[in-house]
Amino acid sequence: MTHAQTVRLALEDDIFAGRLAPGASLDEEALARRFSVSRTPVREAMLQLIQSGLVEKRPRQGAIVAQIDLSDMIRLFEVMSELEGICAKFAARRMTPQERTALRKLHEASEAAYKANKDDEYYHLSRKFHLMVIEGTHNHELIETTNRLGIKLVPYRRFQLSYPGRSENNLRDHEHIMEAICAGDYEKAADLFRKHTNVQGDVLAEYIALGDREVSKLKSAG
Image (cartoon, rainbow, N blue to C red; front, side, top):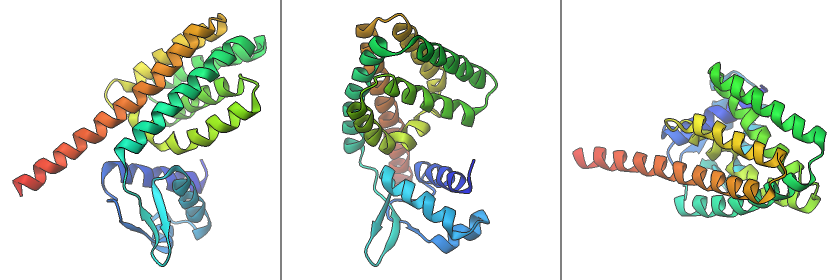
């Protein structure tokens, strides 16, 4: 993992856990000291966070933590679910035998990482599963469009895996999608992938809503 990835993942965790509140300033120099790195990987991490929508860059204010708009996030997942459903459909039709074998091996590696409690490795393999299905469409325009939207959802997808039982359900979803694709059942593959992505959005929305309710309780108690 690069220094930039380490910084980005740590800041993502801080934002979702509430340790960095919406509107909080993100000073490059202070972050470089915190992570004992130069400012270059900090800048790279900030650019990635800006691209995902977790951080905003404002004139004369520098970088700040963005307000997570739950309704916008849910709409993004709705669009992504349709796009990935289409990708699964085309992948089931067009993946080569070699690509299908690679997808199966990737899923087996994900299962091994999950059983070994290697959370970071499991997440990255899970992300790669989505990318492999998207690439399997052999449609440049669809690949570009889906990946462009997908990059915005990367941190949200990672965080929702921390919801109780979600990692196991995610693994089982991937298994069923993989089997449908390898069997060439394109309608089933599309339906499964569409539902899989929609559930991710629903789980994350519930997680955030629970957090908001806890914050409200604390405020009321105070």
